[in-house]
Length: 229
Image 1 (cartoon, rainbow, N blue to C red):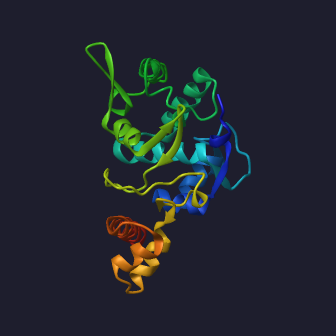
Image 2: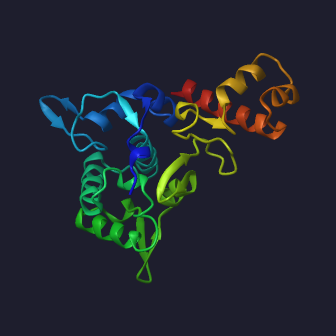
């Protein structure tokens, strides 16, 4: 199994937090842990603190899932930490949630087992049991729909909430920043924001007018979320 892609450093914690639409301090806590009133809280994503502020692609993908998991199900961090650590040990790979193995074939059965062994309450499960068959819960299914897989590894992630959006983050393109057909959405939006016509912007970047519209939609939603935060 070639995990070089998942091990590739891609983002600063500030850039990753911006793309994931979450506080930088929260993401740093997930990566490095923290101390509060003399009590130490270990990392959620990393096995141990590393002192490294940048994120690998695998860490970014796992952070994307955990962000969604936390927001939709309000799971406590210690429960998530226990679950991720157990799954990492069971799979024997550093980024188990950025690999397709837990999500396809017999993988969901393993997720069920790990959930039960970690004592997760049923409302917090990523996989539910229906007629003895594992079924992905809505947060898990939503995460899977946002990931592009190749050779069992996550190679792309859709940062846009709209499931039809072509906007992707890929570690091999534009330093992982959101892009359409290899063109940064922020670069496209700069031209739109400067008053240029969509057709002219599309021609300049060799894109379709619809692509320009998607870039606008994503960047506007991203900026509105940033202002609200």
